[in-house]
Image (cartoon, rainbow, N blue to C red):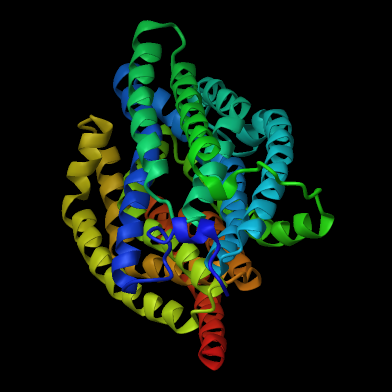
Length: 454
């Protein structure tokens, strides 16, 4: 097929040419840095809240994590799934299809944002009550999460625009915008929390405003410089068939994220019953662990775009070669990250929490140790899941999300009552293992098909 002008202009960004491992690493590094800076939104909130307002305020903000993951995770999963059609279209060199999918995705994202904002604000208090959020942190939790949900559009459209850019092969521009937004977030956190009476609400406002700036910068870039996404001269009307086609890929990834989030809600419910110190330890462990696994997640996210573009270009053997090389990269990363958690977990907990409470530090360190030794399981889960999703497959990856929910539920209601905090610590690795089984099967079947078509 003849290359379009748009495809030629994006040649340097495409993942369909050059040595796979070099392209994968080159794409992953900006994605990783961007993900880490996005983590800094929450990290800055947590650190400043913990140090300025106390452990209970920190526990209140952190106790909302599973609820925000339930709603915002749906939005993030949706936008990642919607981008698959764009990556496949750019890989095949079809600029008109890229435009078509982009405008339909924009409509879908706008409608979903409005619905999620309404339903999340109406259900917040009920969810906090069902999770038995401790009374001494409930006010903090309510103040924080209402603002986060009210400003959901900022998060939704940053993820939409950044995932679209990554689908085109541009993982650097979203990174640059996050640099600016993360710096703004820290400044606003300090200003709102220390110099206004807003308290934890100030941390929420800082996050919303910063994410809104990121989204606006992405949009400005798209309007001014990303020609393949220009709607100038675009005359096609919205088509129900295209909307349904895109939703077929977007909704399973969205539901997958929310299914996983339900499991974290059950775990939050279980830890809430152990008191605010256990909530703080579990939250701190999740925050630190979330940063530690970002290299693995970013590598997996790269495979979503890599598989999509190469599938669109019909370079099937290149997909399999890229997965093999990524497994080796993931093994090295898992070993290094795992050793860091095993050997330095207590020190990381102290740096994060800023307390000498031996119970909280010990529980956090235990959680990091258990997670750290299981990182290779998570690495394979990310690689296989995102690869098959980049190929357009949704059924078994969604089943993997159900398996994560089942394993976390078992841990929450069977292991935690017997093992207490240790039960909470092993819940996440168990969910990784449960999810890996259907995802590995999905990749195995997909690889066999790709071999036949090579």
